[in-house]
Image (cartoon, rainbow, N blue to C red):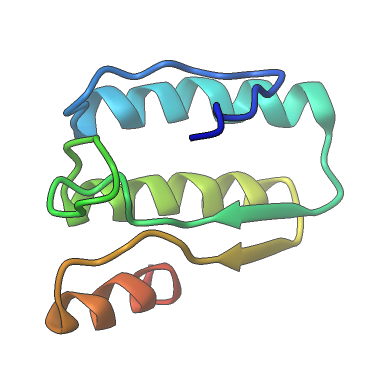
Length: 108
């Protein structure tokens, strides 16, 4: 297996990190990154592998936690008048869940 790529701002999270801890970090990092890089366009990979029920990821988030994450990203872009491109990712555990997973960024 190939080791993961290293970025300029990697944030290590313990397994089963939940909504509160994850979104607190997002709330801290988003303004910092927007201020530092002043983006003209944001690509948001709105994946669902952070969900507890996603077998691919290792975090412990809920659907509500992901919606909060999405809103934080959207609000940052809206408040700074930055266009946003949303892509999806993650593996979902069931057909029933698939619809929600791929609709959640749109419904946010």
